[in-house]
Image (cartoon, rainbow, N blue to C red; front, side, top):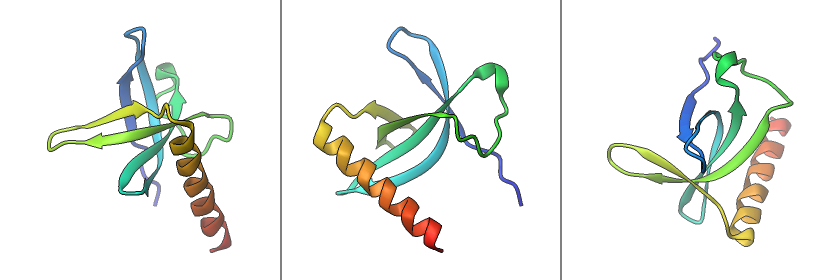
Length: 95
């Protein structure tokens, strides 16, 4: 069964709309993080697998009504999350 990829619209630093496809969610030390790929709004809907996608790793802040994404500015935090995603991918490949 093919699922429709979840597309998220964010607002960039210059106020522009940026569309991203949710690739994966991982929890590290009680915080949630999203691995997203940037998509061109002119190519929506997007395919499920594209090795050339530009990947972005962001912190997820959940409230009752919405989910916000923040840039991870701390290098140690970013590296911890990237390592967790890498380890999760290695486990998936082994299965």
